Amino acid sequence: MEFLKNILESFLERLKTSWAEQQESPWFIALKERFEELPPLSQKLVMWTGFLFVATLILYWPATTMMDASEMADRFEEKRYALKDLLHITRDVAAAPTVLTPGPPSSLKAIFDQKIAAASVKPEQVKSSGEIPTSDIMGAEQRGYFYQIHKLTIKQAVSLAFELEHADFSLKLSGFELIAQNTDPHFYDVNYKIVNFAPKTAQSLLPGGGLLDAVKSKLPPPPPSIPKGQAPSIPSNRGEEI
Image 1: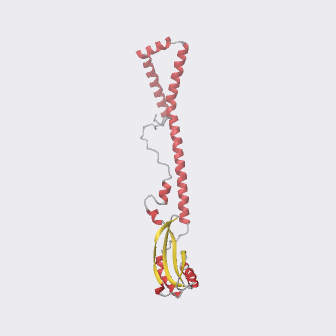
Image 2 (image 1 turned 45 degrees about the vertical axis):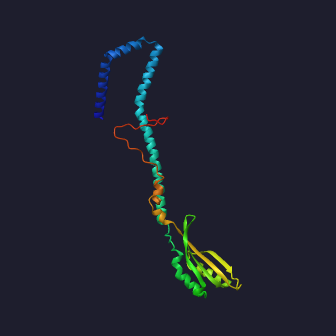
Image 3 (image 1 turned 120 degrees about the vertical axis):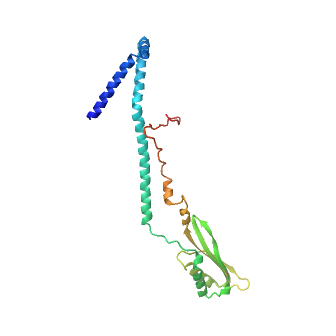
């Protein structure tokens, strides 16, 4: 405290000395004479203007510092809430049960063939079969497999449709078409379409497609760095810097 008191006294002493020297300078004497020649109202106006100018210079730095501090506090709060949300998301993801991605129906072809053979369908009755091209359904990948089987009764067709759909928990019978034969109305040509769905996980592995990238995109941009000893700039109403 004693050190600060000595610095303050030294500063005041220098200020008094400088003021005394300025009072003896020609420009100060000329300015004082012109001030004394002004009418009393103009003198008061000049004094109030000078007082306001000095007060503005004194209060400018604290005011701008407080405005910058308030803006930085708002940015800090935004980042803090964003980080809290990120922590909640990561905890929820870590606590979520692992979801197994099913393989494509083509990987179950051996099981399909066993089901078809068990339904008393001969190999020559299977006219064609193959994998269905992947398609995008509401953000998920639909994979499928089809069969075209010749000469089945309605009972055989319905029973085989049930067996094919229940070959795996992920399967769904999305196509079941019966075409009556002209030669024998008791038999039908049957088209089966078995599909399943899988999330598009490969897209999340791309740059910018993951969960963290989605959260980071919501964070406010970092404040610009201010060099030491330089006062921060405050934007004016016209969009310019003061």
